[in-house]
Length: 77
Image (cartoon, rainbow, N blue to C red; front, side, top):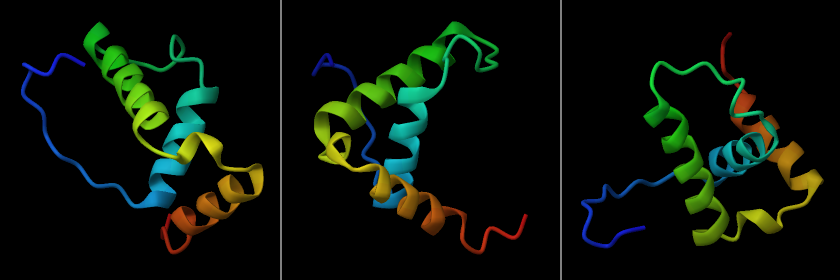
């Protein structure tokens, strides 16, 4: 990432980050509906940041399953 570009700090619940990283690593981004190529690039950028700036890539399938359960609990839909 270019350090001269403005950034926005964001905090994610760890379980959300685990679920998002797993999904981003397994989904066919070419099949995700977007309205502009920048939207796909933003997803790739998020994937890259989660892969390289967190310890989440080392989680086990059991941890992914637990994170999914936590995130989906009490969704109400």
